[in-house]
Length: 453
Ligand code: BES
Ligand code: MN
Image 1 (cartoon, rainbow, N blue to C red):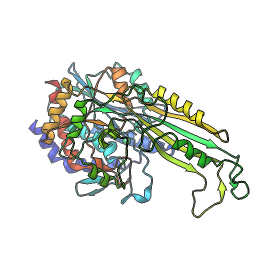
Image 2: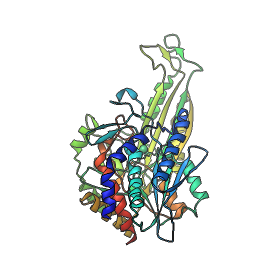
Image 3: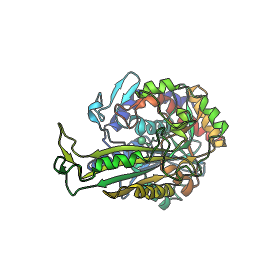
Image 4: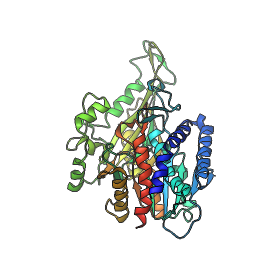
């Protein structure tokens, strides 16, 4: 193993340059105008896999392509899959970036760019580890398949289909994913639960066109106001979701879990300062960590109506729209939540406006044993790579495909995140920490040894 570690150390500067090249692609899956950039990014990634000694191919889908790469000389050794995504979230608002989102900048031990932590830097750590094995002629104790998709940030619908169509080829003993976080640099983490998510777009329509608010205002309902009033009814003051049936079947947190969470280093005060909020907020009876990882939520992600340009415009807008997501916890089935949400909204919508609800993606929460032999192996790899005692986490984000790994391939996913809370995932000035990059490479190299013994 020492030659593997030496190789990683010797080549670190080149790895950072390669990460920069990867980060230059504006691979924004949600925006149709970036379709070509998505393909170019996937091609770069497949070529990179070939360069480090893997076999790789691009698999076309109805959406963005999947990159499939494998270690050569496959035998009947244990077989593990590494999953990651090369698509990124939209970088807007652009004016808040200190350097342009697709021109990576290194400052101190951080590399700034959209996708740095989520997920290009994290997935590259695994490729660098396997490169070290292959280029030093160190035998791998297992076969590895790498699956990198371009649609994680839009719900992974095409990868789910791909898994079903290739279930034999992709059969494996476990999936390894670094697309989650750790509480800070001194606490490497194994995440054993993720929240699910469902999304909607709600449009409220009033008059057939924008109207003069002086001539007609007062005699027609204002769609922006109607939408605000509707949305306001869906949540209580403290954050509890006010949709009847929303909490049905939601299990309370176990004493064991609450104790694990208490071990986490971040204080409420630090969290409040880091996020720049005046005061923290949330459902009573739960700590902020519990609120954002183990409790379901209702969020408005975007709200649009009326005149958005400079200055004012005296109108009653013709329509108003909200982009909504709910985070879900185990036992909240996306289809049922979708139904009770739509039924309730239709029931409380006033007769003065038309209501349209467009469905988006939906994904169940994920929960896996943190005490399985595979989890124990992962904890050993984390402990050795970071030289620190790892923590067990539940996290609030979602990775849609992990449920399909279980259902279609029968494989559990080990979530070994390298992201930090201050990495600004989905925010302006996203970054990835180069220490996490290096330790992540070592963790990956060690993991294959630990998983087979
Ligand atoms: N890496 C995140 C998920 C994540 C972040 C899990 C932090 C745990 C901790 C992933 O790329 C992501 O953002 N997923 C989306 C999925 C959605 C668009 C279907 C999410 O959670 O919003
Ligand atoms: Mn993301």
